[in-house]
Image 1 (spheres, rainbow, N blue to C red):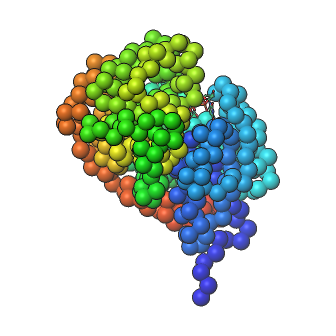
Image 2 (cartoon, rainbow, N blue to C red):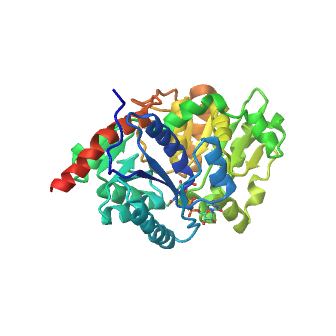
Image 3 (cartoon, helix red, strand yellow):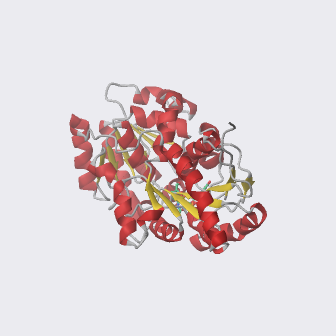
Length: 390
Ligand code: UD1
């Protein structure tokens, strides 16, 4: 008997990526589609929201993502311009490709823009990493999450709290499946390829001796507008980082937004220290190597909160809230906000060996993408069938 095939007449799944945090989520999904029975035909669309070599191409290579079938090349702009431009350029893709569904991941502007276009064209939307909520509507990502989930026909969640959030917003639990965390699929499958931290420093012209001592090192990333877009907030954060660096060398991977703002506000001297390596945005394998070997990670990223939990590395999150509460309840994450005293205190606890040990959450097991592929292949033909008969 020949293996089952993708139903005749059902178009490809259009898979959308736009910005850096999307790439590590999509890579395992595309691999799972290719090995699923039946194979799920996929078309990869890059909106071009992130376009720098450091922010995009390098990650594609690290994650062994195929070259995008289509690149919309939208680039940067205000939220309105960026979202509108993605929508304008994505619509003809739907018309030409006639996909069976549009699959989006995460919470960036491209996620919402492509979901809106698809649903209005009668194409079902599948959202991976659904239901996360910070309950902070000042975050652009929170708006993207809420609206994408309202639109989506199939919602895949990473943690149980997401199901509760979705139910509260009136979303039918029949549309929701708890599958685990595709970003952790990427982490587990790439651990063996992670780049040695010393090599990463050397490649960017820093002396690897900085992090070679017995005291170890810490890793820092900051890019949220709420932390880096005004000097009154950014300066105290840089001051406390400089203070921590006197005890523990720090590797600070700078997002373009953060680097531009440090220059614009004239704050460069605050972290001009031989104990801080200021690196450009790092590739996936470099970041994985750096995080794996770190004694502490200080960040405002969503992804790093989850990755440090999976790696068992203590993480301080410089935000007032998190949409990923499991990293605090079960993992290694501690929320410290922008409270410099809390940052100082919690960092000292970790350096004294009293950081959170944590445990790996349910279904963060490296197989989330396979569960998505299997569920999608079961569910999607039925969705189309019911539309025909309706
Ligand atoms: C976006 C996502 C955010 C995610 C982050 C990861 C939204 C609303 N935000 O924020 O959720 O955590 O990506 O990085 O979608 N820039 C470059 N090169 C690039 C991309 C951006 O230099 O390749 C600069 C531009 O000056 C741009 C700024 O960075 O204006 C911000 O980029 P943008 O895509 O608007 O948002 P991010 O802050 O990266």
